[in-house]
Image (cartoon, rainbow, N blue to C red; front, side, top):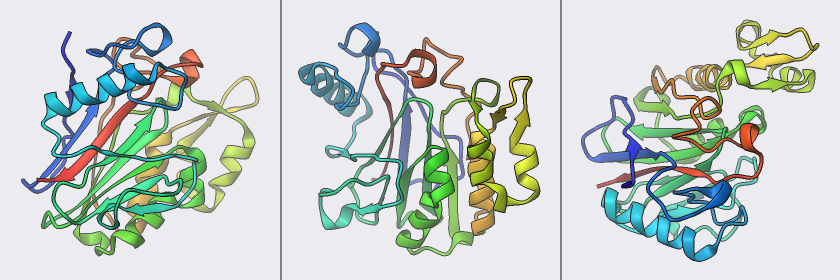
Length: 244
């Protein structure tokens, strides 16, 4: 099996390249089978390195991606200044060949691009990051007026599989009516949360009107995606973006 990925369906300019990987086509085994791209989950480091090389060759990635140390925070790394030297949950780039990478296994990868192709960004957006403002921080550091940005929400856990407690709903109460749409109470006294909708609400509130998204659910598609909520100990897929 060869390395495979999906290409975002969004109105990005021709010079912007982006992809989001599936889990097949690598050399990792066990819960990491087979294209695990995360080096922090307990997989064989040589297998992860081999998987990353295979992706780079297959997708013609122009340079080694900046693999962030993600901590569900809001720090944004500027890849034009060099490799990140501290944990970060988003990255931006304006120079060609700087590759931003987000690792996920249920959280959302969110991509941004300037309509003129002059800047790109990628953010790691789980509920904690969304509530803390990771998307707002990314747009601020990117420095492009929101009306001139396009966005894409990548594969993440779908609503019918994402049960959360009342503390998660409370973290988004300031969203107003959107909270009622994004959280549905269940018989267990908890909520089913629509993470992609929460991300879309945040993006639109920033003034980003052109937002694409995939309907892929990482939890429900075990053949294509890793899912921490489904499997616990597992690998990570990656979403990359760069300027050619």
